[in-house]
Amino acid sequence: MREAMRPLLSVQTSPALGLDILAECRVSRARRCQLHLPHCPAGPVETPIFMPVGTQGAMKGITVAQLEALDCRILLGNTYHLGHRPGPDVMKMAGGLHKFMSWPRAILTDSGGFQMVSLSELSSVTEEGVHFTSPHNATEMLLTPEESVGHLQATLGADIVMQLDHVVHVLTEANSMHDAMHRSIRWLDRGIVAHESHRQKQNLFAITQGGLDPAWREQCINEMLKRKDKVAGFAIGGLSGGEAKSEFWRTVELSTSRLPRDRPRYLMGVGFPVDLVVCIALGCDMFDCVYPTRTGRFGHALVPWGQLNLRQARYKSDFRPIDTDCSCPCCTRPLSRAFIHASLSGRQVNASAVVSLHNLTYMLGLMRQIREAISVNRFPQFVREFFQRRCYLRKDDQARIEYEGFRPPSWAVDALAKVNIDISDIGLDTEEKFQSEDVEPKRVKSTDCTSF
Image (cartoon, rainbow, N blue to C red; front, side, top):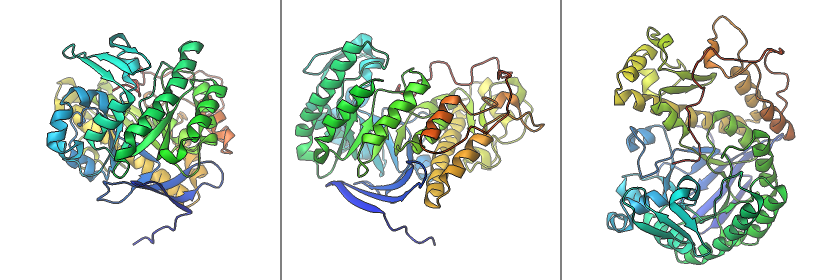
């Protein structure tokens, strides 16, 4: 049995959250931590962690037993949607979201702020809060910082609750972005007051905003750091909304350089594998996204070298598993690519479910590998191996259609160089523009990591 790691730092960030920093990369900002939360029957939540999204307390085609079998220790629910259906009255009668969905492990609930963007035509914002019209039955909801934190999320009983922030699209014009950033700070103060009576069982995270403007990001972080003793962790919000990757990584890097070492750092709405590896190197601990399960429902399977679109005819007589090294039930049974292709073509619900489960297995496994690499001081080597595996090198055993390029993306090269990891020599040195044989996009159209 492996000897327990002695923490480099242990701190109680709130009455309901203990943070242990177990290891830190000597080269980059990557680190391995443990979060001791109220619901940890299988042990603490280990970071870096990817949190699957169960928007309304469930994932399509995935059971809680399957998540437990994957050793998933925390998942995400959405306050806005759960506030509408089934609603706080039902949740209170059930005894909270854990009992309602029969999930004994940790839960993080989003505040409902993102719906200001995703449901912008059905919402309006004032200083009081957000006025929503339900897309289901046209009922009205006023979501205030107090209602989100002190009532809805308190009733749900999540281990980690998010402040209500004023979310605007990342490319919104400057004046609106500036106003939203300052309103998020004011709403944090109101959320802190509403959270006070729940601090023994729940943990409030602040959400830093400011768009892509470095000065505004710094200003927001500095203001929220003045409330550090009142919050258990910090999130980086407002990204993954269509901004250029060069601006995305610089905003993440700036944020992690300013956020305190003794608090968890949660990058909201980010879930592409390349993005996770880069942002872990930049210093992020926690991530969430609908991408693995949503793209799985469209028949796209995530693999270490890229992605397989199992709807394509090329797989109709391919009797190999999706990935021979994968430990998911689909690959270990195994179910062949040909079987999954036929099932997807026949619109069998089980096909979408098994690919979604495979994708979650891949994502949680990727996080596990990264944690191990950090612990044994080989994270930079892991990053290089990760990107080497994803480059198409014109080898006979490589299917070009399953890769995304000859070389790592330039933004990833630049981002990793900022934290002293050099991947500039990886891949083929060619001027040829990479063009997959695939007639469909590599990522499912309209798959937005931040949407629920």
